[in-house]
Every structure is written in C-alpha cells, then in structure tokens.
Length: 415
Image (cartoon, rainbow, N blue to C red):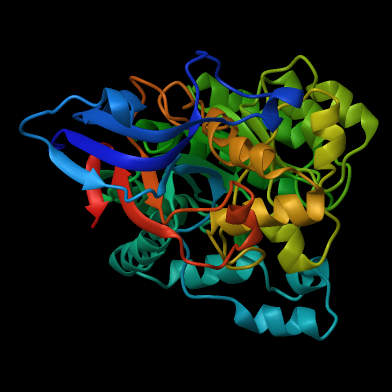
C-alpha cells in the first residue's frame, strides 16, 4: 500500500515532461526540462503535482522526504536484460583476454549454450534467489522499470521455468517488470545441425505453451550472423503476433543482418544492439514506431565497435539505451555507467543519454505513457541524489555513489 508522499527542498527536478509525447527524437533529445528549488507530491502510486518551494502549501497525513537540495530524477527504464541466469561465466572472460572471439567461444560450447546447460541443472527456487539479488542491485542503482528475457533454456521446460521465475519477480519486486520470450536465442543442443526444425519447434510448441500460461509480454529473436536468419525471424515474429506477443529483436550486433529491416516491417517495438549500422538501416527506421536501442555495455565488454548514435540522432531518430545485463557479454545493470559509455564512446550529450535511458527506453517497452519522466499522472518512480553541480556530473563521475532516496510506485523504499 503506497501512502502519499511529499518531497520538499529539491535542488532540481530533472526530466519533467508534460507534452504527452511517448518518445523524444532527434534534436529534442538534447533538451531536459528542469525545475529548481522544488517540491513534488504523490497520490498513491502516481505523481500528483510539483512546483516551486515558495508555492508549497502544508499537507496532512503524508510522509515527508527532505531532499536537502538533492536532485530528483525519473527512475531509469532498462528495456533489455537477461538477468534470470544461473551462475556466471568468468571463464569465458579469461578466454576473451586470451584472444578468443565471441563466435569462437560459442563454437567451443561456451556462450549461450553454456548458460543453458547451467540453467537446466538449477532449480526454479535457486534461479529466483540469484535473480532477486540482481534485481536488488539494479534498484539500488536507480532502475524502476525493467524488461527480462528468457533464452537460456532453449527447451520448452526450461524456457517456461525462466518465464515463471520472471512472473514471480513481477509479483514480488518493488520495480515494474516486463517479460520477453526469447526461445530463439540460439539453437537448443538437441537440435544441433537442424536449425529449421528448431524454429518450427519454437513456433509450433514453445510460443503456444508460453501464451497458454500468459507468461510473456513480448517475443524476441537473435537475428544475426551465425544465429537466426531474416526469414526465420519473420516466421517467429508472425507466430508471436498471432498470440498477442509484440516483437523486440536482437539485430546487427555481429553484422548487418537484415534484423533492423525485418523488425521495422513487422512493427517490432524495438530493434536492439545495432553495433553494425549503415545508412540503409537508419533510413528504414525513419518514420517507423520501432525504437532503435543501443547496449553500449556489451560493446564495452566485448571490445567491439559502438553503435553510431550520433548519426542516428542527427538523422532525427529517437534512440534508447539499455544495459543488456547478462552473464556473457554485459555483466552489469548499472544504467548510469551505460549513460557514461553513451557520452564517452558514442558522443551523446548527458541530456540525450538521460532521455534515451528513461523516456525512450520506457517507449521500447510500450510503457512511456506511465514511466520515463516526471509527469503528473505517471507512476511515481524516481530517485533523489545528493546535491549535484550539473546534469553532466552524473555520467562524468559515473562510479561516485550519488543516490540517497528511492521511490518506486509511490513507495519510499530506501530511507
């Protein structure tokens, strides 16, 4: 039960948006509206009002938080994670240091199949325990809405096991959760050398089983060199659509794969990764409702090129940022570090990076009407920092602990 809150003496409220838009595109990404010397009120789970301290009227019966001149930000929205997994994969980290590529490690039985083997041998209870540790970690770093994918099962039983764990997280975690079915993350071991048959299995058996239990919001496919083809991706997306699952696609991490175009054609909510992008892919995204989502934590960890964020924003696109939190290629859910990488490696301004990690990443989950900005009527998901010298300080001093208070769904969870 959320009680009403009053936050007073806020140095700056950051990320105010009363425009009613669902995403921020192109030049507009460079603007973040702020209000100085402010207060904010909640009504149950929602933001009810805000204003400047000279106009604050007293209120009875609500919890009061004194921000002590700290800044108030909308919670991060992380639209691409794989945080239900078993154990860790630091052996592959050593393999990478010793010169093996991601694809070579996968060929040796590492990568996604390694995680699938481990997950198979791990109980649902233990998976939930490990995942909740990661949930607590990302909440403490400012995330308030997260998408979690399956994809480390690759059999019906194990994919359902992951999705049931995600459902349990949804029911018990303080943040908002969206679930994605990613049976087509790789070809399951039992189908080695029979990729076409595995795709049929995903479409004919897995998707109906997932839909029957109502376990997923979205369907995803790893459409890339060495993984699933454009035709296979289209087939899986079309099957998902019949069961009410909207697509979110892994595309163009390892090569220009056609994943962007097939995503746009089938009205995918987002196409994610995009380390390999040409002008044609940028043109394909123009005028579509598909959100290009970049995962710079993955490029950082793998030591590969970063997505061309500047070209995409300069072309007028909206872009989102997400963590890709997973055991193989991005073992971190720190969205502030993701913002920092966006600024350092992709030359996004702090304002652009903040819009990409809040409003636009909420849009990549179809949730920006309720999340991603400080807006009257939106869910009260925000955190309060220490006093900051500027917005740029946030990605600049990316490891300095700055969060003092966290409010999710109107509930004060860190005091």
